[in-house]
Every structure is written in C-alpha cells, then in structure tokens.
Image 1: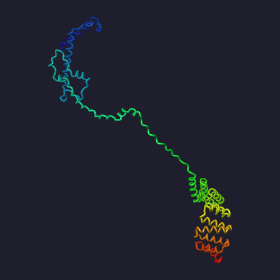
Image 2 (image 1 turned 90 degrees about the vertical axis):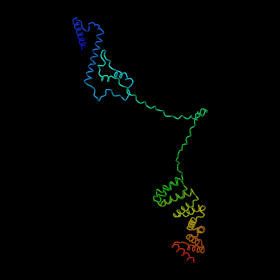
Image 3 (image 1 turned 135 degrees about the vertical axis):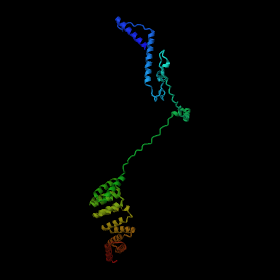
Image 4 (image 1 turned 30 degrees about the vertical axis):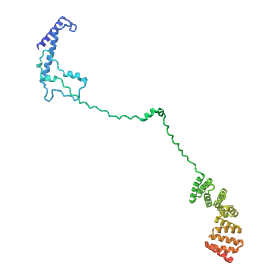
Length: 360
C-alpha cells in the first residue's frame, strides 16, 4: 500500500506544479517517465487484481456438488474455436515478484487447462454396393461388323385399311314387303283406308306382288270401291298375264257386276297358265252355263271332275249343263254321282227333284 500512496503523491505534486505555472494540462509538454515508474504501476495493478480475486474466491467458495472441472461436451469443438479455448485454459500471468505459493490451490485447479473431449468413434466405412458388370451387348458387335445394318431402320407396319360401313338402301322388294306387312296388319284391324294406302305403296315397289294386290282388292270391296278393285286386278293381269289367281278374282268380280263376257274372257286368257286348276275350270264351266254355252260348260266340268271326282257340286253342275245341252241320260248319271257325294240339304232336294222329273 505504501507504493500506491507514493504514486498518488507524485501525481498530486505534478498537477500542482502545472497549475502554478499557468499552463493547461492538455497543452503542457509531457515529461518522460522513467521506466521504473511503468514497471512499478504494472506491479501495483497486478497485485491489486490478485488480491481482489483471492478475497472474492475466499468469500464465495464453490459448493461440493459443483465440480471444479467443467463438464465435457460430447461433441468435439470445431477447429476454429481452439484459440478461444486456449485463451480460456491458459493460466493468468503472475506479476513479477509475487510468490506462486501465495495462490490458493483451488485457483490453480480452475486455471488448469481443460482436457479435450475424446473424439467420437469413427464411423464404419460404407461399402458401395456391388454392381454386376454389364454383359457386352452382342447386338453391338453385330452392328460393328455390319454398320450398314444399323442404318437400316425397320419399316413401320402398314395400318389396317379403314372399314367404312355403308348403309345400303333397301331394295324395292324389301320396301314392298315392309309396306305389305303394314297394310295387312291395318286390314286385320279394319283400318281400311290405312290398309289401302300401305298396299298401294307395296304395289308401287313390286307390281307383281299378288298377295298385296289381293289384300288391296279386299280392302276396296270392304268400303264399296268395286271399280277400284276391278282396276287393281286388271293392272295385275297386265303385269303378270299368266296369273290364274288374279284372273279368277277378276272374273268373279266381273260376274257379280253382270259382265259375263268380261268374266269369261279374263279366265280364257289365263286358261293355258292353269290347266290343272279344278276350281278354275269349274268356275269357267259355271260361267259358260250362265251364258247358255252348255257344250263348253260340259267340257269344262268333265275336266274338273276328272281332277277331283269327290266334288258333288261339280257333278250337279255338269248334270244341269247336260240337261240343257239335250242329253237327259248323261244328266241322270251326273245327278246320281252328285247324290253320292256331300251336298247341302237344299241341293240334295234339288238333285232329287231333277232325277224324278227325268225319270231317273
């Protein structure tokens, strides 16, 4: 402490001299200090710091639970922190002249360098996965031998031809068949006007459609259009002259209208097309009979009963024609053949009366 007092006195004396001379302290030339003064000041400062630190340590000793050695970090400090650790762990320089024995053992333990944490265990080296060596491509060797083969690219397969679906229009026969189905259904439902329209449409597509023509005649007759029915049948014979069925329908219709000549003509024109049609011949024989042409009637009946001898009505008709032609014996024989067949009661009475009259 005497050294500190001496330093303070020297400073006071110097300040008083500067005041007495009237020179401001900032402008007064600085006097060189002897080297001994600096060394003495450093020694005093170091002594003071050491004393203060020792007194604080003595008054606040560390507890027994707290270790003097700082805990080691499990992670190694990076390389750039090494200087800072060295500065922290380096012992504080003692001022010259201060005995080392004056320091406490606890301070020395704190100032001891901190042991570096053990390095972490080295990680096991990772082995790269084994990759099987690629087999040399045989195709490359072939390409190398024949470079022109590599340049030739395979031609793409030809695209299959496009299938264009074309809807073909129905044929006239198909259209006629469809119209006939509509007309026939309408005729069965007694929708005669609709039937006539549909059946006429069918005949426009196929004039030789006999079933459609017959249905049209029936529809016309159902509504009393006999003239249209006759016209339809004549038109049918014009398209198909050999149609015996159409001729028979036309002959019946003309006969009902009183046109016996037209009825006979219609059948005679188509007789060659129906030589074996018994009903056709029998109807023609009846027309000859009504017209008074008994010889022709007998000939037609004979051809008819030859085809179908079981037809009692035809035998009766031939007996009437024979009786009108002036052949009573042949007429009696024909009447007897009629009674052997199936006749209606009224017709049986008629035949019996004719036999009685002829003496048979």
